[in-house]
Length: 440
Image (cartoon, rainbow, N blue to C red; front, side):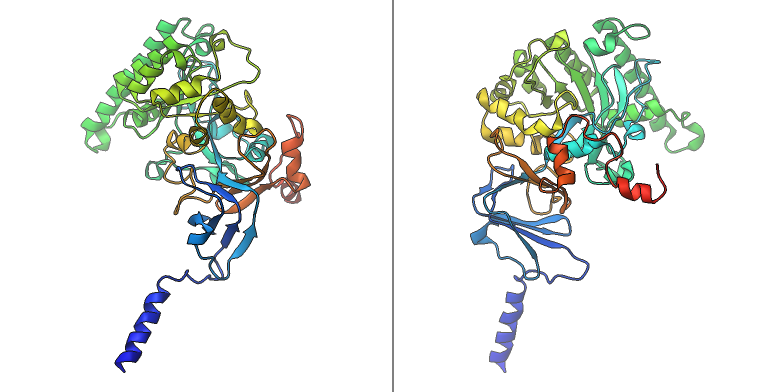
C-alpha cells in the first residue's frame, strides 16, 4: 500500500510539470525552427516560441522546451522571429492636430481624428510595426494628446488602444514642440524665448489648478471648475502622462530639458537632430531620446546637421534612445532600415535591435507588455526572411496578440508592402464587411 501511494505521488508530481491541457476556448500556437531574437540580449539559433491565448507562454532553445500536446505547430525554419517593431513617433491614421487658433492645445485629442481603416496602418504592418505612438503635428507648442495603438484590424479606434495607465485611462502622451515649427506667425509666439515663456506660464496655471484640487480635499463645492487643458497638464505634472517633445537644434534640446527640469515632468526628446552636439548633456539629464534618420535629407534648415552617427554617439554617451519614423517623413515600411543606418556608422547590432523595439516601448510606458519576446508579454512579433538589417530581407508576417494580421504571401496584403505610397484610396480594414452592412 505504501509503495502504491509513493507511485501515485510521483505521478502527481510529474504531472505538475506537464503543459496545461488545451480547452476548447484556448488558442495554442508553437513556432519552431526559426532563429529567435528576443531584444533582451538572449537569442536562440534553433528556437521555440509558444503562444497561449495571445500571450507568450515560453521562448527558448528547442533543446530546453517541450512542445505541448494539442498545439498548432508552425514551422518557420530558416526565418527569423523578433519582437514587433514599436514606433514611438508616427502620424499614420490620417489624424490632425491643433486648430491653429492658439499655440497651446493640451486638451486636443488625436484620438478623435484617427481613421482605424486607413491604408497607412496596413502599410506600417507590412513594415513590421505592431505598436505606434500616433501624434498630432508639431506646428504648435502643445498640439495635443497622442495615442498609443496596436495596429490590429478594428472598426473603432477604441479597439486599438494600448493603455500605459489603465486605472487613470491614460493611453497616450502630450505632444509638445519647440524650435522653428511652432514659432510661425501670429498668434504663434514668434521667437524661441517667447515660446518657452508661454509654456512656462501655462504650466504655472496648471500648478495652481492642481493646488486648488489638493486644497479642496474631495469637497465638490471647493473644487475648481472643470478645465480640460488644466486636467491634461495636471496628469503631466503628476507623472501619469509623458511629454513627447519635438526638438531639433542643440539649443532647443537644452531648452526642452530646462523646462522639464523646472516643472518636474517626464519627457521623451524627439528628433534631436543635433543630439550629437549635446550627447553628454542629454545623458546627464536622464531623458530618453527618440531619433530619426533620413536617406534623403532636405526640408527644414534646423535639420541641416542630421547625421547617421547620432545613434553611435548616443550609445557611447549612455543615452537611452530609439528610432522613429515620423511617418510620412520616413515610410513605416522602411523602419528596419533606421537601425541599419546606425550600424553603418558604428552603433552596435544589439543596440539597433533594442532601438526599434524595447527602448521605444519604454518611451511609452509599455515595456511591461511589448517590445521583447519574454514570458507573459503580449505575443507581438514579426517573421523575417533573413538578417533584420540586410537590404534583401523582407517582413513575411506580422502578428499581434498571437493573431496573424499581415501576410506577405496573401496578394491583398502584399500590395501594401510593394505598392505605391497611396496603395488604395478607400477604407482598408474590413472594407467589404463594411459595405455589406450598408456603408458607402
